[in-house]
Each structure stands twice: as C-alpha cells, then as structure tokens.
Length: 429
Image (tube, rainbow, N blue to C red):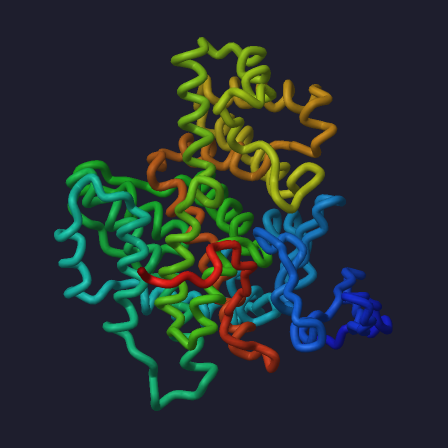
C-alpha cells in the first residue's frame, strides 16, 4: 500500500486540555485527521451519523471526487474503462490491482467458465422459494450457501485459494441470478455454455428457451458489459461497508457478500434503479406525464413524493457514471429500434431538473440510477431483476474491498461507538 504524506498535527482543545492528532494526506490530496487516540486522550468520541465525515480505512482501490465528478478504479477513469474494457478485465483490475494481459485474461475467463455450474444440490434450493420471492432474497441465500458447498481449499496457495473463491462468486452468482429469474416465470433453467463470454452467457441463461433459438445480440452484450463496469465499485458505500463490517468479524467471504447483497437491496442504495422505473410509470398513470407538476411536488417539503434517481450522497456535480449510462441508453434504444415513453419522460424530467435553481443550488443532479433501469428495460431485463444486475456488477468491488480489509495491518473488528440518551440508572420496584 502506498504511504500517506504526513502533514504534521491538528490541535484539539477539550475541557481546557489541548491534544495533538496526526494529520495526513492521501495520494489525491484528501486530508484526514487520525483520531484513533481521541477517546483514550479525552474520553470523548466523535458523533457522525451516517459516517459522512469518517474515514474507516486507507484504500488503493477506488478514488472519487464528488465535487469534480471524478471516478477512477485503480487510477483508471471510469469513462476509459467503460469504453475500452470488458467487465471481466475490470473485475480482474479491481481484485488484482492491474489490468490483465492477454494470457491473464484467458486464464481468468477459463476459471470463470470452469466454476459457472451450480452444485446439483444447490439447484434444489430454488424449488423451496415461492414464485413471488424477490430475486435479491434468492441471490443472498445462494451466496451464503456457497460456503457449505465450497469450503476453503487447504491444499492450495493463498493466491490460488483467492482466485478460486473470486471466480466462483463471480460466475456462480451470475448463474444463480439467471436461475432465479427462470424459476419466477416457470421456465426450465438454462445451463451456462463454455463457448460464450461472461455477459453473453448470462443473457443466454436469461432468455434462451427450448423453443426460441435465442441468439445473443452484440449490442445488448456490449451494453451489459458497460453497465456492469459502471457498477463494479464505488468506494466505501453502504453495501461495501457492510461487507467489510461482516468480514471484520472474520466471517468468510461468502457470508460477507451475502450481507452486502442484502444492503444493496434497499431502495436508497441499489434498489433505486427499480424505483426510478416505478416512479416514471406512476407519473404517467397518475399525473399524465405532467413534468411541471412532478417538479413542484418534489420541491414541496410537505409532499411525501421523492424524485428517485436525482441527487447523490457523494457527487455534488453530475455523476460521471450517469453521463455514460445516459448515452448508452440512447444508443441501445436506437440500435434496437425501441421506442419507450418512459425514456422520453426521463429526458424531460432531467431537463427540468437541470434548469431549476432549486435543484442546482442544492447540487442535485441525475445519478446513475436515473438511466440504467431504462437501459435494462430496453434489453428485456424485468424490473425486479434490476438490483440483481447491480449486485452482479458490484461483486468484484466487494471482493476487492474485503481482500484489502483482510490485508490491512491496522484492521480491527468494526465496532462503532454511540452517545447514550436513555434513562439513567433506575431501580426495579
């Protein structure tokens, strides 16, 4: 791990006592105050709901500048990666720290194909879920089940063990996601094929049937590659933090990823792209597509309506992923010859948001969720699978964050403090 630059100390005065806290800087100029000795020296803890001002680690994986709209994986700009790389290459980059050579790409792809099948006993699990079960619930259960079917490999090197676990998760979660969809519509499952690439295999498992002679559209496959790359990592977000919190207890990788899937499920996190589509459909049905009325409702503090897909905790300018997703959505619809009234409504809403001082003064811009759901919809992905697609894309990020956490010499079990505000000592009468 790269060394940080020491910048001296910050002084803090507490109840007449002055203490010195180390001040340091990351490789991109981010400054931090080391407060590890704060409670020991002062008896105080910090109060930071949502941990918006708290750095939980040093990391070499993903860099974000929310004010400038910058997102980089291992130093590579998200636009370059989405334009020039396959998802498999980006997954390798996040996990191994470098883009793969041709040989490494082929070896990694071979492992992904080798581990794409689910254990036959795991296939029976799908029959135990009700038909209306949300695919995210199924995916989470499948992830944690992998630890029983595929325990640690004691007779291999550490790196080989990691490679096996990584490719198992990446490949088997894709297979499990496709199987869960097939079960939900009552279709026979489709096994992965050795002659198809990662994204092509997923699309074939989703849409092939014994009677339709499905052929993977290269336009759709390319779009899926880009979408998964856009979702691959996003620094210390909610689900990544959950993965690391669970992993800090020394829980295995499968259990940690399962917890991350559950965190991603929430509508304020990965579930937002599904809720964008549902919001747009509701606007057409209930408001007749009246954008002016919707904008006024969004600005009304007394109205419970929320404009989904607008604003972001980190980005205070246009989400760089949203720029890629917006153009990709237009390209996919044009190349597939798809006309969607929801896309027209979304573009009209975006224009209204960007032209309104209310949103601009609050740094509220469309985020990645605003357009990804529309693209998935054009590709034929059902709405309740949108968050699953997000999860498949995010798995390499979770894995890389988990591995980095395990190697951190300063790592400790996650245990936030609190400020107690309940009753003081009472006696039972």
